[in-house]
Image 1: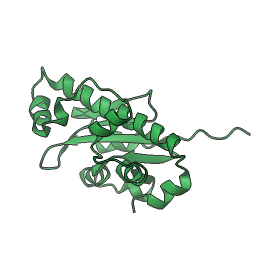
Image 2: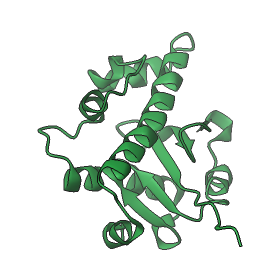
Image 3: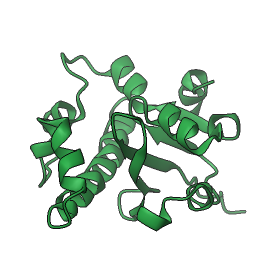
Length: 170
């Protein structure tokens, strides 16, 4: 009997200072990618992202809590949610856990870097129709690079389900 393929979900959210989410990027691997924003940014569409997940839900930093608060749904009670920042801190010796620095350390490149230096710029550009594409690309790169980083680090440090289970968000 064939072993069922593990499907993980990687999520990166962008939000305003008032914690209102305006963009969610997601991926199940380092090939497929999608985004929710505007009229598609609904609780129903967000919950749909989880329909095929039988593995873990990965975020970085405070995204899980922000998403649960925004959608009023504690998905960590239904899925194994893991903050990849915790995984990286447990396994990598480095001075900075800023994603930009980790991407550099592991040889992962990106096209859009300007939002890594000024967080306010992302909010201004999101409201500017001519600059919105840059924000969408930035978010896409955040998610895809998060998947790439996780895959590299999981392989290098032989990270297993038992460890992920022990650090899941409660």
